[in-house]
Image (cartoon, rainbow, N blue to C red; front, side, top):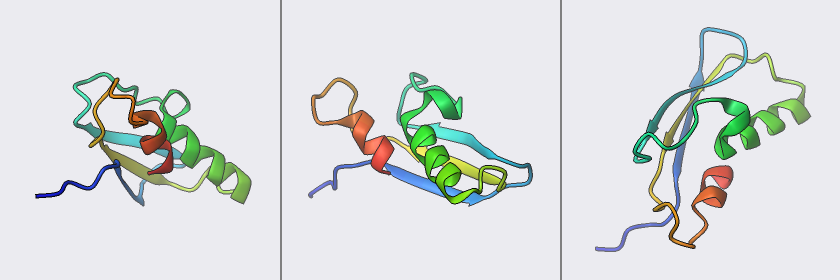
Length: 81
């Protein structure tokens, strides 16, 4: 069985203005829920900022599939989502 490398990011319409990280799976509690301190959240925020949509109500889930400290680019996988 071949596992595809990379993280999975799910973004849904939210109920409050702005981007919020609602769930992080597979990280063992090691990743911040603060959008500005999370590589996936920060990348998404900067895209929204570029589009002039920072107040758009969005919820983000992060499903980590890249192991931490593996040298395989787990932070980049989150940012690329």
